[in-house]
Image (cartoon, rainbow over all chains, first blue to last red; front, side, top):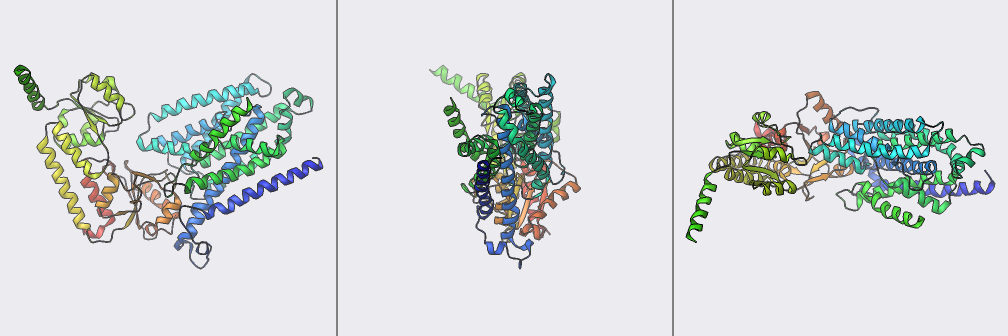
Length: 335
Length: 280
């Protein structure tokens, strides 16, 4: 790392880090109800008799942390997928991860599965298994006729799996009754109101593994952006890098979706906004996206729970309202 | 001119005189009403989700709200089909086949009694229907009287959430028959001010509204252990008066979610749950 890059890295992480920290600190202070912070942090009142503290520590804080985790995972997974597929329009959901997750959640809801694994309910757990299943199928297909990973096959297999899982989802939907259909829709729109810390804690190991791989991936992704051939001639083991990128980003996406549902547009809006600010170098884009993604989703969630209070908007609606027009602008600007 | 009048009069008399003998009901509540007013033998097919009364289990199924089986409905040669207002395609198809329809509107508790009278008129059972409606009204009034004057617990009425987690909670807002039933049973809906049938109740909103009682209504029966487990989930929100005073109730009886002739039973059950002292 050169001296100037080191300085830019420090400036970027500190700048976006402050933003993310500010979001984490301020978001629990805002909500549809007014609470007294003095009461919330008072040790004189037992927790079970302190609604202010419960609103702060059960309703708002886990929700903010979930927003940080899901936002940073989806945003950085978006960066990795865009780098891996060398396609600016790739998202964490392009390769079928979210459709697999949705099918899992759908099965759990429709057939009324009732269990908890490590603090995760049936729907989140099934969604994680569904995303792992989708990733395994796409991965196997992309490897089948190639020594490394063919990004073309990856893309085609992913898009096909998306369509196939969507068809299966409609098939399962046929067996769902009215309230189950409602619940499935709710899950698909995304929801960060987790009301306990357990889902975040359960997802944390997967998140840490993904982040570690992302840190290593920054340089390989830079090389891949020059093209597969030149990356190879510069000493990059292309197949290993692609495999690591695909698996880590899929793991991050699966963990994020199991916590908050398939919240759209974060994985495309955040990376591109960040690139506009810090340029294309993945050593800056990756950490900046992870931090900005956290701040962005926390901000969207604050809007979701306050704009129309006491009624709440699904957070996926807010991210789509912000992200949709941005995505189109990006599309027009590129051409 | 006179001949036309005579024919018209004749047609009208025949139309009035002949109650439908082959009724298809896609709506569980209406199916229950038909059986309750003694028109059960006129029902030839029901919707996919109809389970009550037990007699319907033997009847053919012709789909439901989203997937009505038009071909099967037509093949049964019905002379009355009961459909949801939003089933516009089905309604057009039935109109083309010149099959009379009754369009069902789902809303508040008073509408349940109106629907009963309407269905009675349609099925040629006016007397039985108006008797039934009157009896239900009397029973509901009796419950209202019994709980009158007692403190009305501020009640959170949950009709859907994820299994074993406080996520995706949908509660009754201030309109609809579930809200009306709880109010009649002596509860005060904590979301009475939200003029929607369903409120997405977040953890914060529930903590802020601090209900005195939580009433979960589920359409499918569960065993005692599962019920206890689901009630225990609320323990997290220990600052709620409902949790502190052990007033979290889960009623797993289908009658509480069907706006049909069992509403009086449902209201009595809810009243006994919220006000056990009033029924001693």
